[in-house]
Image (tube, rainbow, N blue to C red; front, top):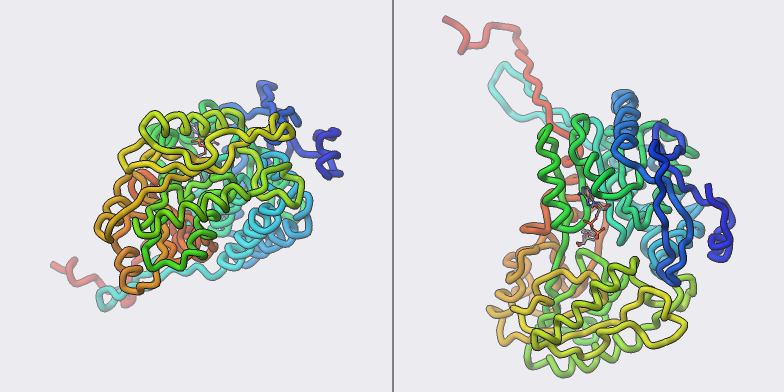
Length: 502
Ligand code: NAD
């Protein structure tokens, strides 16, 4: 536990958990290593957490294995009730979680209050309700036979989470896995581990049995790698970059574990000439600037009809310039810092690349000038006019950085929309119903938003196609991802089946 003036000044009045959570105990890593955690708003170190390495991951997997069968056999409604209680506990402690997430990630408290924490609670509640409603089925087979198919948990699953929505993504991964009767070993990002360790405490408080959830913050190349290759893990679910996704697939091959990948995106956000411009401008700002653009589903490529382009760019850039950057703890702040110094450098470098390739920076492209923001990892909301072949239109920038490209007609818009390796989120703004549905059918993406952007709900499948990965989170799809079918054949008449007779 760490009790530090940094936490007090952030309005956190109880000590913050900084150890690994294995088998229901908070422990140091066996090697005794630690990881420094920084405040993105001022670059100051806020605490050290214990570092999990391969041997700690092994301990966590053993702990999970020893309790998973009992967890799977528990009455499903009791399992569900524990998740419902956890959702309540998250809401009861929401103010603390909001501040912890803001301190660790740079998310403005107004966003964490509106989104991160309510969505986390909602996700646990949804899957808590699902635990005793997820059914098998009875296929119509040969006369004289009954065949029933039951869905069984996989066993111990490994889950690896990135830094952009640490708490929310922890819930997306954990909740369906637990509802289905799996035990989990979860590795938060080494950059943002604090909120998941607080969730571990809440899990104990509500009575989730020790060992069912184990949390091992550590580096990707050590703890993450071990999780991906571990022979006793039956599935690895990963959210992060495509480059790491490839390493995980390779590491998983040893025991042929199931793999689920939620990777990057380069979401097209198409504004047709008949769009409601006011809605499209507001929606496009939400699509790219929320969470400082650090969202895999961000609408990072605006494609706008040439007739509207000038008006759109003028009004959209006016809106971008008016976004209030500031201290994430200030309720008036609309945009906080990026989550790490390294990432800030990476995003700013894309502004240089854009110009070198012939793009035009309409606004932003630099850190803000205000002296009170100088120590933070800020990047101004950035809008760049660019061509589809430019790197900034092809590569995921993952910051408050959006390209604008014009199109002449629907065919060109579709070609541009599908002209990247990714296929995760996508949006379109039009009043034309048949065009909207035609594009929804033709766009290569796991999610399409019509006259909206970035709406998610635990009942609706979330995931991508192409190099955005495979598998789905949320809804019944997620329950399928965390279970496997077992087909049971019953010879009802107990006679020799006809094809056995000689
Ligand atoms: P990252 O791939 O660097 O890291 C993600 C996680 O993987 C971290 O916990 C990290 O420690 C771990 N990791 C790193 N190397 C590893 C290895 N060799 N083996 C096992 N684990 C390893 O990604 P990031 O920078 O943390 O997150 C940003 C990326 O995540 C972006 O590309 C973004 O699009 C993607 N993302 C995707 C989704 C989605 O749902 N599709 C959601 C959010 C973020």
